[in-house]
Structure formats: C-alpha cells, structure tokens
Image 1 (cartoon, rainbow, N blue to C red):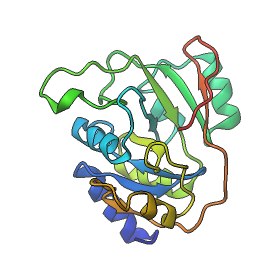
Image 2: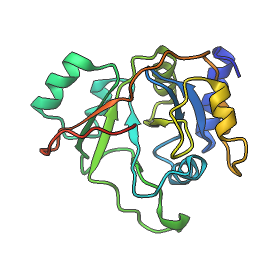
Image 3: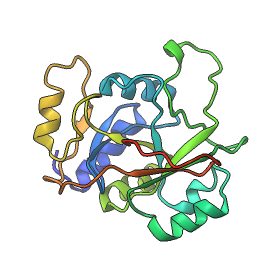
Image 4: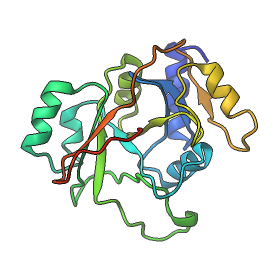
Amino acid sequence: MVESPSALDRALSVLRSGGCVVHATETCYGLACDLSNPDAVARMFRVKKRPEGQPVSALFPSVNEAKRYVEWNDRAEKLAEEYLPGPLTLILPRKENIQCPIFVTPPQKLKAVSFQLSASIGVRVSSHAWAQTLVTRFGRPISTTSANVHGEPSPYGVEEIVKQYEHCTEKPDLIVESGPLPFRKPSRIIDCTGTSDIQRRP
C-alpha cells in the first residue's frame, strides 16, 4: 500500500488490532506493533524471527512524551538536544509507575501470567515524517525495529522485504511503501543508565 492518508488510517487500524506494520523510517524500513499489547509484541517477534532475548526499542512522538515512561537524566537531555529527532536510541531506566506498560520483549509463551517488565527502555524519536505521524496518531509507543527477517540485511525497499518474507509462515500484516530509501547506517544506541555506549542494530 503506497504512503497516503488512507494508508495511514489502515496502518493505525492494523496496530490497534494487534498486527504488524512495515513503514519507512529515517534509516531503513521498520516493523511496528503496539508495545502495550503483549500479544502484538509476541507476534512481532514471530514475524521477524527475532530471538526472545533481544529487546526492541520504543518509538515516541516526542522527547517530552518519552519522559513520561523513563527516568530522564542530564546526559540524555544533552544528547536529545543535539540529535533528536533522528537516528539515535537512548537507553534509560523505566519509571516504576508508568501509565501504559511497554513490553520490549515477548511475553513468555503467551500465558496469562504477570509479565516482568524490563528495567530499561530504548527511546527513539524519529525524524521521518511518516513514522512521526504514525506514532503521534496512534497515541501509544510502538516498536521500532528494522523490518528484515532476523539475520537478513536491513531493507531499504519494499522488494527486499517481500523477498525476505516470501517463504515465511508469518508475515507483516501491512506494508506501507514510501519508495526506495537512501542507505543510512542503523540508529546509534547509547546507554544512559550508567554503563558504556552500546553499538548495535535497531
């Protein structure tokens, strides 16, 4: 589905129903789901074939919104002022009493149990207009992880995505096409919880 107002409405509907949406970001194409829905997070991990021990980051519409969920600090503020919105992920401690849960790893075996929430959250604020509009209109944090099947290259075009998922049992529920994206390095990840910088793929 080509990027358009109707595609945005469709993407929002898919996210609200617990599905996964592929959309463009300021780096490569990303895979989004509702991070407050444990079933949606579990599905996203299955679709991407992502190992359960590898958490995903959370996309927020703004730094101020992210501050509702994490314990902000001076280092994060300095980095955010210089680089956000943009391809930077800041890892920060989760607030104990956040209003909306964020599941950055899949719930265990989809059982109805009390899930242990992660102690930290990877915060993203995208500089890509469509991604920014999507998360703003959705009203809750969404996942921000590259749309490739785990172990495959990050995709910069829809043809790559279709090819990677061609033989997969589970596929994204919607792909929003924004044309080929210029190659850019993955988001830089900086741990602001007190440990050293971390470099890895989003």
